[in-house]
Image (cartoon, rainbow, N blue to C red; front, side, top):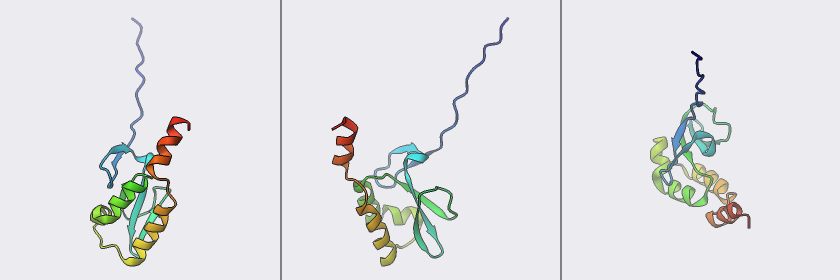
Amino acid sequence: MSASKTVRKKHVPQRTCVGCRAVLPKRSLIRVVRRPDGVQIDLTGKMAGRGAYIHNLRSCWERGLKGALADALRVDLSDEDRQQLSSFMASLADEAAVQEEGRGG
């Protein structure tokens, strides 16, 4: 009898976007972290602190900044934090541009 080898699929951590509630692989989302000195964007995904995940789409960030992000981080966003997150959101593409890119146009 020959032993058949089964190839195990590597576990991919899943996280939920606080903006649209879609469950996606952790690496495809941006992590926002609550730290003692305020809220920060964690592009490495390794910062210490309570984290929340969000898409790189402006619509998700707009919904997140309305309250879902603050609830997930269990913090009241200060004006300074909100300004920092809004400036990061302004650098993101909106969904129409992302959809056009996906179609090759």
